[in-house]
Amino acid sequence: MHRISAFLISLILLSTINGLAFADSFEQSYKLIRPVQPTQSEHKIEVVEVFWYGCLHCYNFEPYLNRWLETKSEDIDFRRMPGIFNKSWIPHAKTYFTAKKMGVLEQIHEPLFHALHTQKRRINNDDALYDFVTKLGVDGGEFSKIYSSNATETNIKEALVMGQRYRVTGVPSVVVNGKYLISASLAGSFENMLKVVDKLVDRERKALKEK
Image (tube, rainbow, N blue to C red; front, side):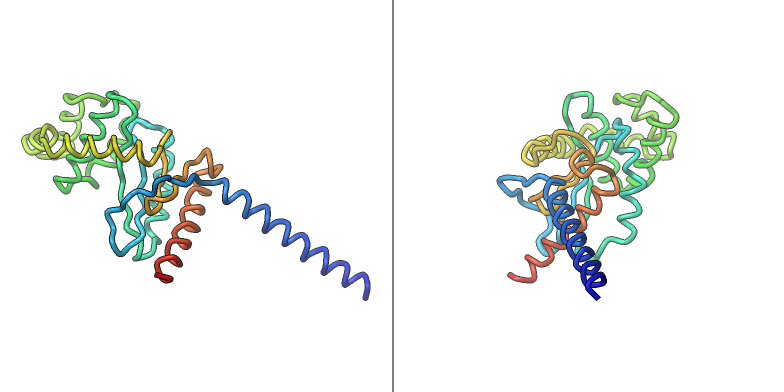
């Protein structure tokens, strides 16, 4: 009887210790964004991926993110935002915003990642990007017009500002509701990144219900 009790007690203690260890590791898996940044979603929980097409880690993160998107809850508003750490990243950011405006993002997004990282093609300037998207069947005239427009320049400036406000230091990163910044270096892996995202989304969901 005493042996059984001791065994049960040891299991409870082990479970408690593991739970505390997980809690500690979870709290170290993200950074608080201060001050909290406004979101574009009034009634949903906003999740933003900050990425760069030229980033191999972002390319490798895509399959994990796509699986997460397949099962995400309806109360999550997901969007992507190009990271811009220097001028050489701007052409890819402009391509993203242009494709989104044209409604051809699905036609361009994964093929561009694939061309850069699997085929090792150098598609990193205006002319190369124009040539790439037109060969995918995108209207070159409309692409050039939107790519060079004031609206796209405004998108670029906003992405620069928000990247600084989110305090993003690397990509891929994920921002939850303008409050939390998650990266693979903090979470430990791409899979863990999305587990942390889910827990923070749950936290925000509970907070919304309490309002």
